Image (cartoon, rainbow, N blue to C red; front, side):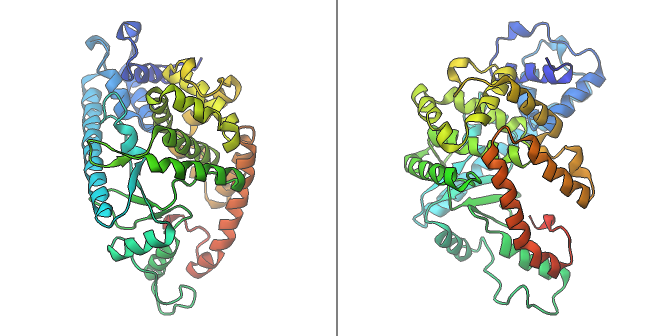
Length: 394
């Protein structure tokens, strides 16, 4: 068992998702310092809004001190407002692309939030929207709509007399288009937008990735218009796409409880046939080992029932996954190694991959292949910009 703040946070999350309140009448945090640590942990793991929903279900004499309660309530209200803004902008983007004759689907964030017991407690970030047509036509459309700057007419590498800021802007425009999406430099009402021309970043292993992308593309034929004013993909799509997202980010450094909570919500809303169909694909997509670990975490932290799990829970890997999530926080940003200077951080990241070898062996190997490929690709930019690291471009 994990003591202290962690267990109390797990209890709040279960309360938020509908655990019987009478089962938690024993819940008690003794001091203001302990409440502060609990709030900080919820923030680190990006579940402030969900945890606050749990706090609201506690007996009044077991809630946090007034000053912290007000701070927590204020942030939870800000999260609610941001969710409403995300929904409005997602609907606006849907209408904008629909007028251009393009099918769309909102991926992850806003599509997940509407499945929560309270649609406004999820701590959302940017908007991920899939637009059909493929890379070239989507990039051209974004340029025609003025949402994306056109490619520089002069070569980045042979440009002369440019300031450092101008060179950075040119490089950023050149590298803004990844293998699966365009990250728009200009925010929409303060919200970052990623326009996907492929269903997902997918796996790094090219063999399992081809299978996964075919499956996801076929499922995008079954989008649904929801009352919020945008289209969402099927739950079968969401189960596959978001598992790939979790696995990829976990191998790259870490995930927070927000991604785990999303998957809990998906499994609770998916039909038995949807879960069974995707469960049959786990080995084919290279997900099986990671899935056992995630199922254990979902059962231990959120109380997911065994009959809703995709496979048997793996306690050994699951405990390692939970320890990594708690240590690294959302996307691994709180790992101590991430705060090191560039060379120690580089060694830390190379060694970190070895810790995850047992979760997804082929993905770990291909992650290193991908790293070195991108490293070599970026060498000319590093030389031109005279920077050892160009992280700020992304």
